[in-house]
Length: 398
Image (cartoon, rainbow, N blue to C red; front, side):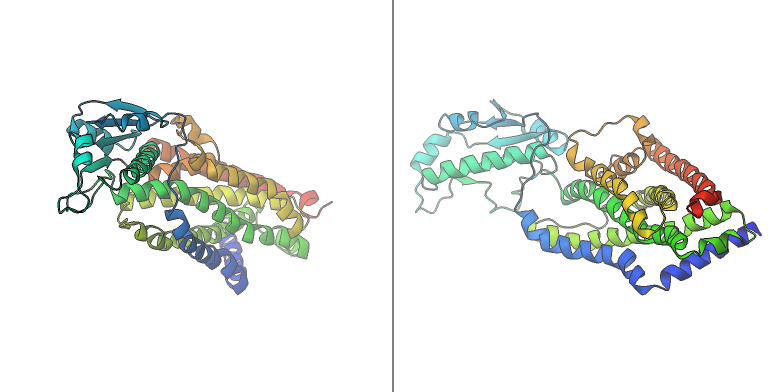
C-alpha cells in the first residue's frame, strides 16, 4: 500500500509536469538549446583568446643555441629562461606532461650569421626557429604566446629573415598535446559550472510549483487528508522532481557536446567524442544523479517553508548565488585541493568530482564518497521535508 501511495504521487507529478508543454520546454528543452546557440556563437571570440596563467609561478623556457641578439629580448619577459645545450628527449618528456609549465625554443646553430646572410628573394628557406609547447598547460601556453609575439616583432625588424614554427613538412608539430587532452581541459573547466547551474535551474522550474504552488492553490490539504504517510508524500515528490531536474541536466550536457565542434574545430582541433570511456560516463551520471537528488531536496525544503511560489523563488536566491560561486571554482582555483575529506562538502564535492572525471584525474574512492555523501544528505533532506509536511503550522501557514 505504501509503495502504491508513493507511485500515485509520482504519477501525479509526472502528469502535471509532462501535461504542461511550457514547463517541459522551459525545464528540459530550453537549457540545452540555449547552451548550443550561445556557445556556437561564442566560438569565434573564444578561439581568439589565449589561456592565462592562474598561478603565481612563472613558466620556464629552455632555449638551445640562444643567439646574443635575442637573449636580451627574452630576458625582459616574465618567465624563467634557461639557456644552454638541451636534451631533446628530456625536453619532450617534460612537455608531454601537461602539469609542467615549460616551453622549449630551438634556434638554428649560428642564428645571427644565418639571418645576416639570408637573401629573402632567394630560393633557399629561411632559418626556422622552433617553439615547442603544451597547450593543455596554462603556463606553457602563455610562454609560447610571449615567445612567438616577441620573436615575431624581432623578425619584422629584420625584414623577415627567419621563420617561426614553419609548417612545410609533415612532421612539423610543435604543440605537444593532443586534441583529446585539450578538449578534456576545456570540458573540465566549463561543463561543471554549466551543469550545476542548469540543474539548479531545472530544480527551480519544478520544485516551487510542486510544493509551494500546491500550498498556494490549497491542493496540499487534499493530499494530507488521504490515507498515506507523510514520508511517502515527501519521497514521491522528491523522486519525481529529481527526474525532471535530471532531464534538464542531460539536455544541458547534450547542448554543450553538440556545440563543441563549432567552438573548437575551426581552431584546428579535431573534436573527439570518444574521449571518455563508458565507465567515465557512468561515473559522471552517478555524480549528476546524486547532485540532483541533493539539489531537489534542498530546494523542496526551502519551498515548503514559503507561502507561495513567489516567496519560494525569493527564499532560493541565496542558494542560486551559492551555485554560481561553487560552479566557478574549477576556473578560479589554480591547484585543486586533493584532500578526500573535501568530498563531504555538499555541492563543492559534486563540482570537483565532475572536474576530476572530465580531466581524467578522478579517483574511485573520492567519487564513491561524493556520491555516498550526496545520497546521505538527500535522505536527510527527505526526512526534513517529511517533518515539514507533517507540520500543520508550516503547511497551512499558521
